[in-house]
Length: 204
Image (cartoon, rainbow, N blue to C red; front, side):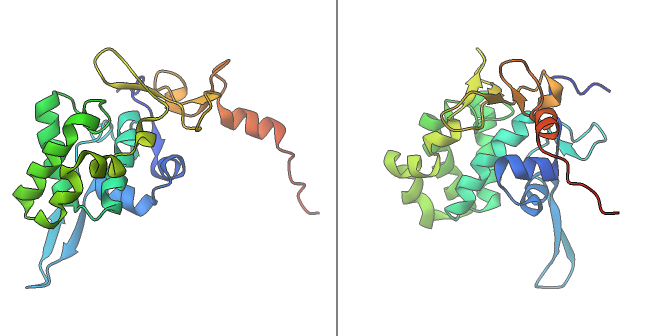
């Protein structure tokens, strides 16, 4: 089993980097079960997509999963259901030929029609005006979501500089399993933190 070039983020670490609660990350990417209000039977809800590490036997997500969930949060904040997001993800994946379509630069221009189609399919027509207008759609898919993402020639995200207006720190899945590193020197930020933060003396 090889994990190189994928990125490796435990859910608490992914939560810290994206500022999305761990519980939401697990529900979105691991699926969940609830009791039916009609008969009390358990109902299973599948994950939004098959994560990069789902078949690797580790309780973590990959680099592209980490970036993609930031877009999921943006739509959830505007009241779009997980079912519509799932349908839109499938449609965009098929149209773009990419496993992670929300992160693709094309989504900023082509995503409106994809989500409008998904809303109609799931019956969430009250939100159609929110995505049909270019300005309204850009309020959801803000440019800041793409800020700091570096793309390869295939329109796939390759690096992420998470600090606004700074490239001092980067997440690059080919180095240190994608954990934050200092751009100049590739030293993990955790190493620097533990080297410079004074140790708290223990009691007697």
